[in-house]
Length: 320
Image (cartoon, rainbow, N blue to C red; front, top):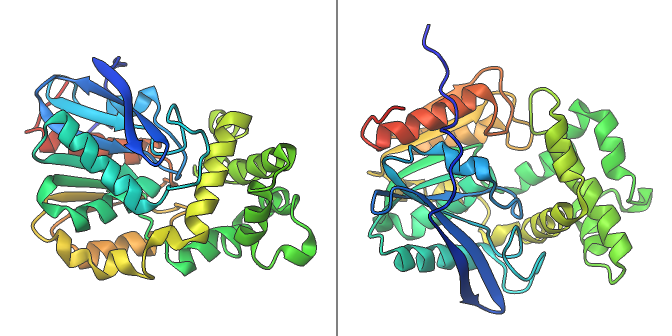
């Protein structure tokens, strides 16, 4: 029986810094691995999730030269939880600034969850800059996907956790949970913002894995993280991520010819598997892995195994 692949050993960046991207925003970035190695970029989830040290470990450090960055408004980027000039297309432009800063002609793009959304938007606009595409937890931000997670669907699977998500919202406003949370997450009262942010963030932290993960729940309940995570997610989702309805699947033909891998958990709650399957049908050149016994998180064993296999494969079959 083939053993599951897992993360490469911990690694520190060989370079890090802040990049002024205009509009009052500065984004934190770091580079890890082999200077001058195979170019790659990692796109975190959320929006508003930020990067973590473990994200560096998805790539063979003896082969890859990886850029990781905190998207506008989160992690170490400033201003924290800032919503102005913060859209999908601002982030796509930021990626181009980082690519040019690094001197990369093309790079492998790896993104999960919201990171898969951003990766698809970037690849469809700048396909000539993408050498390979590795996507996990496909999210195309249709109205149906948003309603499934924030209105009716996942609520039926997690009634106890849904009750806590509804708690800050008066019953009269629960017909549009995203709009009701928007009002509170943009309130002039910081205490109101924090209460709403923690409820929004914990809802996600407690429903992304197949089995409970106390560390995820704890991280999502921390004030500083939750504020950026909830404000940015809600800001993006109330605007449909500045995408036309169904745009990313409609324009999947622009991915033709890009080598790719799609990895998705069978029991992914935030991101229903049907959209990953639809992307697979629209972009058949990409390898498709629907992981049994897995939810949404990249850290779930079967999902992580396929992500590491994908980055190894595109590095030329490197192994530890």
